Length: 471
Image (tube, rainbow, N blue to C red):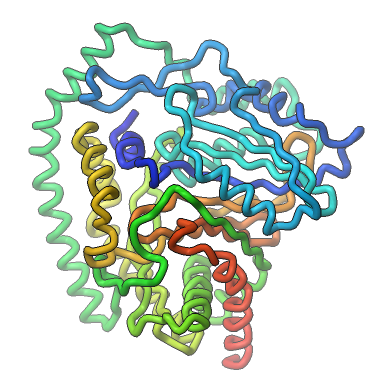
């Protein structure tokens, strides 16, 4: 396990659960004989060779002095990882969100492979939801998409044995047998011995990154562009220390409408998505008379994965951007977001996408885990300046119709970890002609997260109207 993967384990506390969740909404109406509860476990068993995170468990290093290792489980208990529940009538989207929130609020058992699935039937119009939970130490956003991609098919019939064999050859997931005590001890000793050298190499890298960042900011400032700065965010009412309880909500908007906004004013798809979030936050906070005078700041995960990297492991960095919530005009908001994203990308390139990966490799397990628990216990997120207000991730999904266990996939709603401080995560994915927004928050800090989700389509409509008016 690399250091960045392992850091998601060390940072986990009883309140801060470091797993990611994917909500897959299915239409099983075309399945001959109808939906049965054995379809998902049968699919997982048939695809285990394509799913390294589903067949591996953690093995701590000697005395937990270095990063853990992955080992294969001889006979994974697939049924023991899958729960089935019938949603109470009438099976609304809001009721599904409550079930997902309860599922997301439970930590994964580290003695077993770090995944779990909840299958929810009884939803409106005969729909079924498959909710997949995987620890972040095993996947990042792109990695999670790769895992789900191993379960998806292009038609109801599924894949042929030849197609499955070809897919297995591309996973790169060789079996990981359990090492003996001498091998594990050697792994720990080598890791500890290499740490001083790693620190020595990191110091000049950090110095160069700081110098590059200063130069980058000078260049963008002279060009008149402004970007977001960490620790400069206002304290939003939902920011602070978190509890284990979660609240979940979904939003769904047409992909064509977001593209229409992007095409009308320029910029990227991500610029339009961030501006939509900014408009939703402004409406949500204004309705409560809690809109800060200065803009909310978001942190945006950035993939630094190479094109030929087929693993599910974490290859992620991050950048800061503004949501321009202090601007009433939606087009001015979008323009400022676009500028801030350009500055954020320049800052990210100046610092170097691999700096976080290199630094995480040196994280001492016991010390890092202790710091995380102390930070939570003494409620530091309530007292220090706010680093950022929300985490917003945007992942491109498949543009074509796909199937899961013979059922037509109707919608995808991803959910990321809820962190101490922001207490809110928004993850966005495009699929076919729709864009799904998954919102998850600490229930104590933001029990009404559904109101923010309801503001998303309104913020998009506001932008559409403004672009038509300005045309």
